[in-house]
Length: 322
Image 1 (cartoon, rainbow, N blue to C red):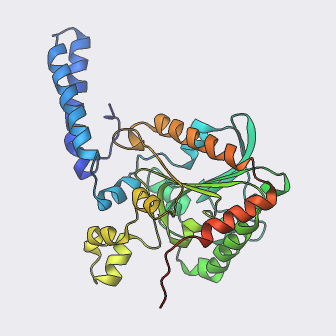
Image 2: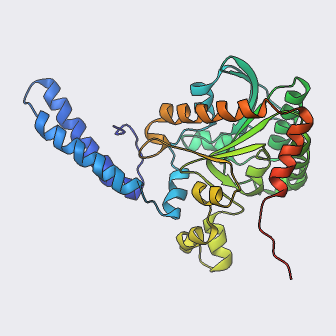
Image 3: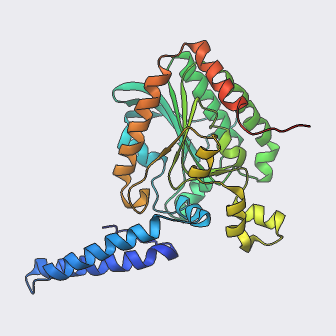
């Protein structure tokens, strides 16, 4: 049960309420005041059926909401669940530290790798400190520094994407936000080590792509990846941000959409009801996919890795001419 989750999306609420009733009956049964075994069994079957009905056919806008769920696992959760011996490396050596991107060396299955990802907060205080997962230029320059360090020591790079986008503030623009992102794209294109990028929540615009130029690009089942948010798209196309659901349908920004268009390489399955209902199981699924792709990329030479990455991104999109 996921009744420990304090926040529920509108379409999740019927399931959460039913699970609360089940937990209450279990507590009463444990207390010995009565035996509700039969009632609990019936409600559990009903909950399982309801969960299937709710999550088997989500709309694109509902997937967007799932990708933003405040209980969804973040980068540091995956560090705890998938890696050992994590050593955080801070600062861009130019301006300062940006906590909205976290990175450093760690061990995956006992082997050293460089890991980095966007990090959001769980509450208002943490989100203020993490800038809601929206990096400033120093965050992207830190990421570039760590990626170049990984190449120097010949270690694979695993990036975790989860951001609404790069921070659009005046200070960020003054310090060269666009240039920092562009340089990251250039540097990642030429790195001679394996790079696997996984969208674990929101993949927003250049803020996501700045750590997303990988030999393999993966997405969790209930994540999204797009050049703009549905609200931003609706504001531009329809002059009405409230039509975000309509924009989401037009944008085709879900993992299934992007796999079909061959923009990503694989969809990582989530536990029933979403990654926030069982983070350990979500991490386990991601670990299996990462092992597979790391094994495949280990067979390529440094030059082969660069060529593989170049070919992947050159093949994106469909072009027609007269």
